[in-house]
Amino acid sequence: MKENEFRAIMSKIDTDSSTDRKITEQLLNYQGISKLDYTIMKRNRQSILFFIKRGKQYFANVSKVAVAIVLLTIVGTATAWAAASYFAKSYNVDIQVKTVEDLKPLLKDFEYSTSKTFGAYKNERTIYTDPSGNVFDSDIDGILRDGYGNALAVKDVYDPVKSGNEVFAVLGLPNLVPTYLLDNYTLDPSGYSYTEQEATEFKCVRALFWHGTKAVDIAYEPIKDSENSNTSTYIIGVGELDTSNYIKSTYITKSGLICNILDLQDELTISAEIHFESNTLGEGSYILSFTKIEMDEIESILDSIPISSTE
Amino acid sequence: MENVQCTEQWISKDWILERYELYKTMLFRIAFSYLGNKHDCEDILQETFIKLCYHAPDFPSNEDEKRWVIRITINLCKNHLKSFWNNKKINLEELEEYAYEPEEKDVLLDILRLPEKYKNVIHLYYFEGYKISEITEILQLGESAVKMRLKRGRELLKIELEDSK
Image (tube, rainbow over all chains, first blue to last red; front, side):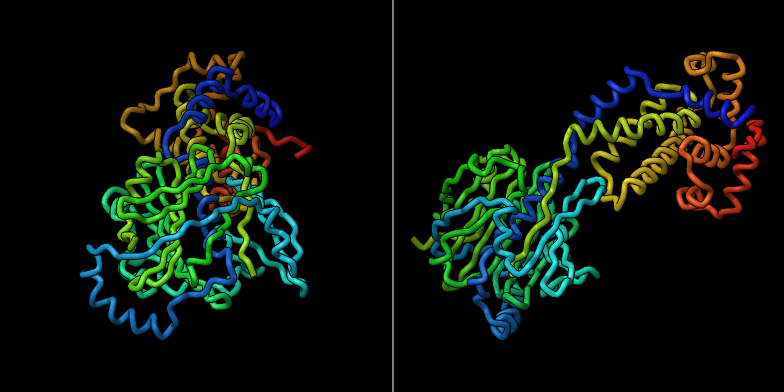
């Protein structure tokens, strides 16, 4: 048998229309954490990161010396704080929705181009070049990295797998994770993470919680002058959604905390942002992004944030 | 400086169907060369595509993705054959769906009977057009091993090298 004859015989083996229909139906109706869900959640994580990195005007309200001092204190008192509720004054925040295109003018000193990678996620990354010709690429968390993968002015100072008590203690705070999540959801294997950005004094605690296909991303950032920090920006990709189609509302928790809600109306993404000021907690911005969770449950999660209004 | 996220295209129904069209024939042939029946091949393809569409890592290139699905399919076929429920008997009636002439059926039977180590090399070389150096990467074998398996596989299938090759 010649090679071509062999190829010809084998080429008759192929799927038929019934096989195609059966498999594609299964694929399109597959239940579980789909890549689409994952992609949306990833987008939410990126948006939330920009959300909390939006303002150069924000600086950590706790100095490094203070962090060290408070950390020593907190380690000993974390257990006592764990069950407590803390008092704070919360504020209304005007959340704006912008696309990545809207951001470009902010990068005045950077030229940008778009390059596509053709991996499974069909990522379309935006590549930035600074005036000296150095190329930067934004990674999955939106952190600009140079051509060698080095983060630009960002460093993770802690092993991401820490307990909630430990990671909040770095900021001199008690564990502020909603108790509903601790009781009903599972912490993502990536654990809690703490990031600080030297250039801007940005600091942030983050964690992701799962329950089936539902996900909650929490991010806490100490800020300065929360009373005047009355706007924030949620960033979405170009063409993802009609930016005029979102709904903004306010939810007041049972303990009186003002939660500024942004519903992107895609049946998947709702975010809540809380700005507060407190004698014990300092000033902070707390953002929770919910993927595939109904509003009733979101309210239960927000109600379980261990902060009560002073008003 | 502000941090900026990368933009993303959502994984869509079209993306899933596009991937299915791209790989279905290749993967069905690989599965068929192991299992020899349509229904088992459908199960393997379904599992492979679910892994690709819902659980796959991010691939640096299309070629990496293709090699990944090939490896997944081969591994799933091997696992399937190991299972208690598969007695490895070949249903000759099933083969008639793909082989119209008696000699064609013999070729398919030879392929199915071919030891696994030769089967993969033959398939990748003849149907996917991979070079020997590429097959070494996909199957993680040495070049001499791939050449030897290709030679032995040809002998067992009685394939004559053509002058043009």
